[in-house]
Amino acid sequence: MDRRTSLRSSLLGLFLLSGQALAEPSIRHEFTLDNGLHVVISEDRRAPVVTTHMLVKVGSSHEYPGQSGLSHALEHLLYRGSAKTAPGQLSQIIERLGGEDNAYTLRDFTVHHQTLPSDRLAVALELNADLLKGAVLSEHEFVREIEAVKAERRENVDNDPLLRLFEQLQAIAYPQSSYHTPVIGWMSDLQRMHNEELRAWYRTWYAPNNATLIIVGDVQRDAVKREVEKYFAGFPRQDLPFIKKPLQTSAPGPRQVTVYEDVSTPTLVMAFNVPTYASAASATDVHALRLLSALLGKGLSARLSTRLERQQTLLTRPEVSYDPVARGDNLFEIQASINTVQPRPLDELQAAIWAQLQALKKNPPEPGELARARTLLLAENTFARDTLAYQAGDLAALLGSGLPAAQLDNDADDLARITPEQLQQAANTYFTRERLTVAYLQAKEADDE
Image (cartoon, rainbow, N blue to C red; front, top):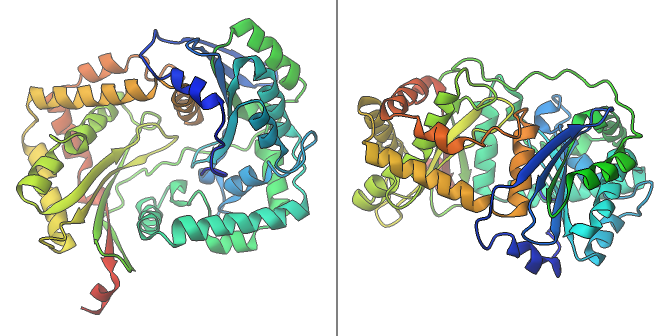
């Protein structure tokens, strides 16, 4: 989650130049220091800008019961004083240089990132090194910052019915996987959290051999390597805990949760336990699931929009999401709201969506429909990766999930090899009731019926 609203600066104009037109593929380099720090450099010279992402492989999926939220709370506290900066000073330094910075925590990793003029890269590297090993983590700042985290949870989760719904869905969708732990943490755990827990978490996970520097922009490999060695080579390698992948190793059976809130538009979410690139026995299934998500939910001609929203006017705002990049198994999610003009019960929406999935199981899609889904996926990814920040974030997601930086380099060819019959097979394998979790967001009065 973002630590705060991103800073706006004069750099923004330069940064946007990098997304004006598709350019030649970036030149990528990788090396590892003796202490285990992994470095990935992607040269992109369209503007005199560089973005630096320091990836630390720790997130909510590493946390133990009763200690949820440690990784996210630590992300906050790291900016409240270090060996070289006073509280809040890191962001002030970046802003004075015409740049912007932020940080976020996810299930598998934490990222601290800065974007600034490329001739100021050394400043970003020095500040990241200070984050990695120089944090103070004072008791005074902890007391202040943990209240900010609690307020963030109240505002962004507790007071948002849809986010509460997704939190409850994930809690039951992953009975065997640590992905059931919310990134921000359960409020009961935040209320009991102590600063010494964060200090121990920092000492355990913030190590050079558990970190990756991702540097994208107007840079040159040899110069970057010299600066990285200057600021990071002195940190010692350390022993790390052994953490298994968050796998949902079996289909646990149908699950359902209902959240009652003051909402005007009841909403349905159907989620299926599915593999990712990191957990699938074959990447073919993952490619097929990606194409199924586009076929069902991307663009005006997607099946759910065409058949259930416009033709049958049964539902509104259908969305399909599937992230194939994760350290463990993930969810294939379908979300839709009722049509308030012709409201129908949520179980009827569920039955209608289920019928569309059954149709995919019985008959493979036409080649033209598959081609459309493939084109949408490739166009979406190509456009998004044309910015420095997305390039770096994309690499962080891959590396933070234990995948190689080159995982998606041959994406067009990989998707082109998938046949309609393989989509049908994936639908039959994964769209089953044993893998299904259903979440209903209902108006409170529905509880009295």
